[in-house]
Image (cartoon, rainbow, N blue to C red; front, side, top):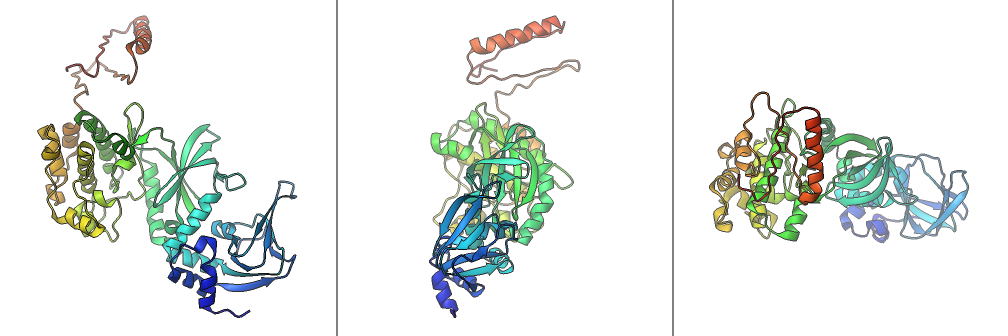
Length: 463
């Protein structure tokens, strides 16, 4: 059968997984396909053989014979024109898991592994299609249900860089979250080189306000980041649901984020810059504790940035300009987040990305005092300084930042050298419920002969 590239492009445009791709990408795929015919009952794919081809069925029908643990056929799936077979084994570089038999005289186009990998790396949209196909098979009955030692249970969410799954660590008997890097990044050698270098550093971060990363797994031709499972709601969802925060709530959250960033910026030889501080990367639990998440584009300070990374509304001018990048870019984003939390609006907004970026580089930010008249001067001053266009004029001393952001409810205890203070906070708990715990603790201190004093304060107490 002789078929020219235009005709193959037209045929491939009808394949389900390729239908939404630009015709130029489909044509590039067509230029690298080969054609093969199969007679009725002929073996198209043999279970146990290494996956070397992805087949696009053009004419005829095939049957996928899925075996059970004894090797007997437990399920049969029929595929016909416009459907794909062999893609997962090729994608994850593994053996075929099932026999595929031609049910009738069948014609198929195929990509071999080399051309498939080249096209994945060349076309991010094609890589995205493959990522969607892969994730559709994960955490599903009869699909891919394990990564490393972890059992995949369900899909939690998806972003531009990764898909997140809920999983179970059988050894430690705990829930974890596993983030799968999308193939457009996993097949990008430049990104992957940097990711490999920084993943170990990010996994070494150990701070109560930073999500714990346990390990990075190399499987299925991509990378999986295993981290603690968080229980709470992200700040972006809370803003959308409830609107602007009070001054006290804003300080409480910003202070915890500042603690996390100070730690990250001082970690290791060069420090770690987050580069994507924004509300959706801040998770708040029921007790008001925050966790800073998604260090996906994090890394050490850099002299120059070739590509803009991060969320456009939170990008510091030096990132947009491709200038020196260091921790002050995170401080700029923290200032944007403070403005956003207090007003439920961003300092800069525009109809197009280009206009937005120009505003952030050139336009003076609005005065927070006009949008939030009740704001105190110290917090307003922090926002003004954090949003400075020139990083050299931006507030950058973390001790000073934390002093400004420290919540009024935090106790500033003056302790003697032989004193130890323990603060236990109860939220959404009546005194009758917490009182039994306090009484038991007091009894234990008395039994141990420890000289102590217990003070009970309420959130509306004057300090």
